[in-house]
Image 1 (tube, one colour):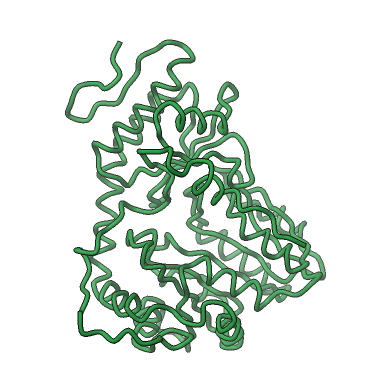
Image 2 (cartoon, helix red, strand yellow; image 1 turned 90 degrees about the horizontal axis):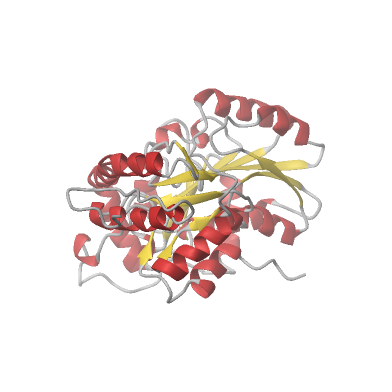
Length: 373
């Protein structure tokens, strides 16, 4: 059975490819450049080891708690880590629970394996549906897939909610994997609270370094990491030693990169809030919780998929409609961008929305209104 087409990648690399000049679709902070990194021309370009070099793995594990033994695997981005995990843990007829809106890989790869998948709606702007989770569990439930802080909604599980999920899964022997791409402090990671869990992250989103394709998986369960290492031997074999060495320097300067991430969010947040006020007839902001993007619920008069197409065709502006995340009536916008670029892009959205009632609202950022009456 063929796996379903990956709708997000189709949108980015097929339908929209070559058609956009402005990008608010990317889910990470503003990209960095090679000049921002430390590269030694004397580094050897040999293979790395299959699980990643020991020095890099030690840097990764050091970000988590010092409590107990940790096991880790370096991967080709976080998505490979997730893919390796699903294929290492799951078997045909296992039951998997994941949330919507969410990442298509979380349900399509388990389905491809032959699992039964329950899609649990976690409404943007609302608490986690703990009661619905309990109702969804059955005797074959093996895995709960969560993403906190959540992509695409920007919502984070509260400490109480995470504690409840762990308690429920622990009582049933259910695994938890959390995509923690947007978690700044890994002392709060699920792996520090539950032994039957895996944390996945990378240098792509907070660090603005997706081109490094440098991700990882961490767990206190050695056997699952070993299974993932073995599966990786059948896929990408190992990572780039050049990029692993670069990643060591990045993580040694972790605080500098996190400060950059926070500065982008803090400086751009007033512009995002102003945009939300001006667009409130059409869009409702779900407060982002330290994520570089924000989710807007679209009101009845706005079709999120058509809005995305109109922005692409009219302004060459790329955004992410809810339909790409298995959902409806919403859009995700990245706001951790240079302020002029962000202001221009958000004004394009306002112009498109304002056509509906001929108003001329716009954002200003120390310069004249771009779209004036």
